[in-house]
Each structure stands twice: as structure tokens, then as C-alpha cells.
Image (cartoon, rainbow, N blue to C red):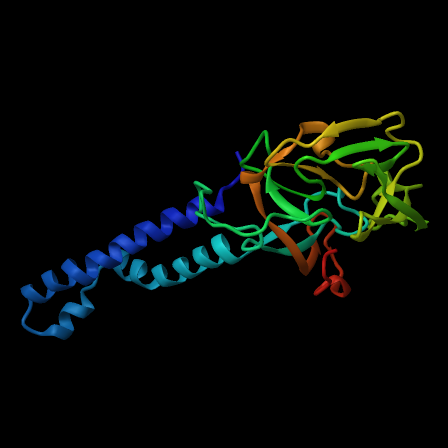
Length: 265
């Protein structure tokens, strides 16, 4: 089971906060009552209490920032190439689609929903303990059709003009021979790519249900997305990907500083 940092932060904040309150309203007074010199009571503060009081403000600040404002996310696969690479560390705006309570994910502040073309981080609809990142292709009520590796949305073909042959980085041979296109997702321009020999005859047509979204990777022929595991419920949305703040590929032990600060579109 994946490590749930959010749950750990909530528990750690609750425990250290409880100990801090005990120290303020009971433990400290109890120590002072047993000694004649106040400074000696301060010196006898238990180690556990000392650490709890010191770490509680830090844990609380991190929890608030990560739960309600911004969260870092690491790109684990090549499904969003050519725009996002393995090793990219991105910042996700969690306020973009509304504010939710940590762990239980109940929305407490509503905001306008995501737009077509947004790069979205969300909890996987089948295994919600895992976060995924894809591009939002279909809004609720949209009819999405995919034929000959091209999208048709609500009967309108999505323009995709050839840009260049993809040059795989860091030795990723699975994308050799892929073609990169400038796609205009009904007003949202971005790069996407397909492989001429992969996933032939994978055409489909779906209608997006209410309060759900259809997601696809920009690396269309090397992406597990809504074509494989279905629609993403609105309550699974985590936030909108904003920009790359670091790049470091652990497996390849390589870094690309020129990607730092790059906006995501």
C-alpha cells in the first residue's frame, strides 16, 4: 500500500498538538507546583513534550499548505511526454478546484470546476490511494470520440498539426518513432504524441457522465488512462498542475536544470 503522507501529517499534527495543549494547560502547571524555583521546572520538561511542542507548529504549517494550497508531485512515468518527463517534480494548485479536508476529502469551499485541457492530478478511480496525472479531455455531458488517433469532441474534430519526430530522452526506447503534434483542444493548445505502429484500431466513442471527467495522457499510445479504467469522479480531483520546480531522475541519476520553472500547459 502506498505511503499516505497526508494521513501521517494529520496524525502527527493531532498528537503533537494534543501534547502541546497538555503542556500549556496542565503539565507545566504540575511541574511548577512541585518545585520552588520556576527555572528548574522549565529544565525538567520531558523530552517527548519538548519535541512535541517544537514540531507542532512546523507540522501544522506543512499540513495546511499541503492540504489546502499547494502540493508537490513527482512524475513517475512517461504517460505525459513530451510535456512532462520522468523525474519532473511539479507543484499542484489544490485551491484551483475547491478546498477539501485532508484524508476524508470533503469539500468545504467550492470553486469553478476544471476546464478542458487542464493538466490534472487526481486520485485513481479504482485505487484512490494512488495519485495520477493526466490531461482533462472530456467534461460532464461531452461526447468523446477517438478515431485514427485523433479526437472528436461533441462532433467537432480536434486539430492536430505535425510538429516533429520525438527524440526519446534518457534512453526510453518505447517512444522511438513517435510523432509529436500541436493539438488545439478546442481552444487549448498543447503538444501530444502518438506512435504510428501502436494501438491501431483502438477507436472508441463515449459520453461523459454527470460529475465525472474523461482523462488521457499526452503520450497517447503509452498511457493508462480513462480508456483503460474509466471516468474520474469529481470528488477524486486533487488539483491543477502549475509548473516544474525540480527535475531529477532517480533511476538514471540525471537532472535537467533547464526544466526548472517551466509552466505546464
